[in-house]
Structures are given as structure tokens and as C-alpha cells.
Amino acid sequence: MSDQSSEPLLLLKRKTASTLDETIERCISEFGWAQLLQAVLVSLSWVFDAQQAFISVFTDTPAVNEWSLQDASSILIGLPASSFFIGCLIGGLALSTLADTKLGRKNMLVISCVVMSITGAITSISTNIWIYSFLRFLTGFGRATIGTCALVLSTELVGSQWRGQVGIIGFVCFTIGFLSLPLIAFVNRGSSWRVLYLWTCIPTMLYSILVHFFVRESPRWLYVRGNKEEFVLTLKSITTRSSLTLSFFGSFIEFEDQEHNNSEESTTSLYSTIKMLVEKKWAFRRLISVMLVGFGIGTVYYVSMVRQALVLGGAFSPMLVAFGRTNRWLSYGVFGICIASCGLFVLCLPETKGRTLSDTMDEEEYKEGVFVC
View (tube, rainbow, N blue to C red):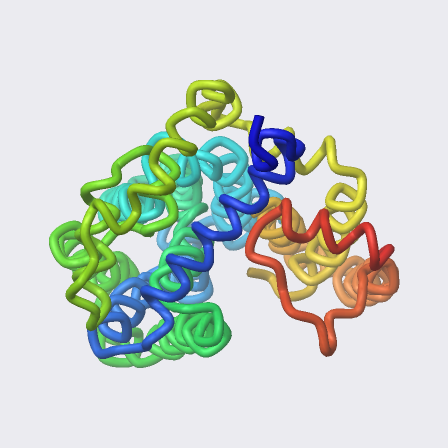
């Protein structure tokens, strides 16, 4: 037998995976206009995400007044905002892994935007606080995966050296979305609160159409799912290289097909990603620490598993704010203790300064052999 056949299978897998990652990196490392336009178009979803996350600041109070609920219980007044974040929590847990398995980043982003826009538009015809809260719950459920899908998709379309810069675009768009709400409210200051939902949801519907027709799926996701032809077409469309053909990647296809046959369950299981995080102790420790920090931030901020912890904290905040109208300790006191306590868990996270961030779990696990959290 040859020397190669005597090498451990795990080592061969790492070598092939490394070569595949390096090949993709080599193809998309040259940042061009096509990649910039794709990244900007994908990141625009954060604008509409932010609008639905903060629109309750401008609509809940007028809605409560319209239904003469000013003297109602604090729980009822804070119900719409809390319902939205509970929907975000449940939607994130139920839909998050679909972007990695069945649907992909692009399709999940489109579906999330469509669901968010439709339920948001229907919210404008709510007749009472219960229907209003239920529709806010559905809106939160639909938009739960927008931020993570947009961030992952936009960064996977560019080389590793540009991911930090491209990732910032999404947060800039989120800020723009938040700042646009006061402007929209000012323009419609003489109109009903219902108009704000139409102003924010109709553009989201149009945006979803643009994403469906003009945004490319993640090359890495396409290759892992076995769509080699579209994988090559996507790389050709976002790079300036013209020599990319199926034969260029032929050396990887055979191995990937064998790997797919041997571990089909692991690649198609809906919650295989979450299972992997739980099984790897180093990843689970970091996940729990960041989730606890995210819970504290979400509680005070009033706004992925980490994202779910943040929205869980956000779900409690409206209730605390409502109770705080009669007892300030129930808002400011609880907020202060919560963020101070949860913030301490940052000390459990590893330092990333001067370290290259890993692209895959296997790469990070390999580093764990040298660097211990």
C-alpha cells in the first residue's frame, strides 16, 4: 500500500478540508464590486429588522390609548412588546438551523423577511390588544433569523481578510433602520400608528423580491449540500477569475461524496449544529458564558443561541418598565443588578486579541489542543 493509504483517515480529512477552504479563499480573496454589492444588498435586511424591533416605541402607547387601556395592568400594557421578543426567542430556536441544513442562508433570509413584512402589515388592522400582541409575536417569530442569516451570508461571500469590514455593514444598516423610525413617525405625525407598520413593511416585501433574484447563496453552503454546479457559478459571478470550472474542483468532489455517504445523518440533521455545540465541552462553556452575558444585555438594552439569550432578556424588559412606573426599583434596580451579574461571565471567555478567528469548529478544536480556555 502507498504511504498515503497508511495515513490516519482523520488526518486525510483535515488535509482535504483545509485544501478546500484554501481553494475557496483563493477564489474570493480579491474583493471586487460584485462582492461589495452582494454584501450591501444582504446587509440592508438589518434596516428592516431594526425597524420592527423598535417600532413598538412609537406604536404601543398610541395603540393602548386607542383601546382605552391607560389604566390597565402593567402586564397587559407591556404584553405587545414582550410578545414580540418571545416570538423572536421561539423563532430563533425553531428556525435557526434551517439556514445550515434544508433552506440555506439566502432562502432563510427571504422567507424571514416575507413573514415579517406580511405579519407586520396585518398588524396595522388589529382591533384589540390581544390580536395586536399575537401579531407582534408572529412578527418576532418571522424575523428571528434575519440578523444571523444576513451576517453569515454577507461574510461568506468575501475572503477572510474582508469579513470584519463586511460584518460592520450590517450593524451600520441596523443603526440606520433604528434612526429611520423617528423620521417616519415625524412624517406621519398626523396619521394613525397603523400607518407606521405599512411604511416599514411594504418596502420589506419589495426588498425580499430583490434578494430572491439578485443575491447569491453562500458558496460554502452550496458545496457542502452537494450543489457543485451552482457552487462554481456563484464563485464565477462574484470574482474576477474566469478559469473556474468543475474540473478545477474535481479533486475534492470524490472525497466530499464519500464523506457525504458516510455521514449523511450528521449533515442533514436539523439540529446537528446544536448537538455539536453541546458535545464539544470547550464550545459549550463559551456558549453558556456568552448567553448569560447576552441575557443581561438584552434585559437592559430593551431590544444564534446568543441572540436568543439577548431576546429572552428583552422579553422581560417591557414588563419591568411597566412595573417601574410605580416602583423604580423594579426597573432600574433590577436592570443594574442583572447587567452587573451577567457581565462577570465575560471573564470566562478566552482572549481573542492577536489571535486569528477560526472559520470552522474543527479548526477551533485543533487550536484548543494548544490554547485552553
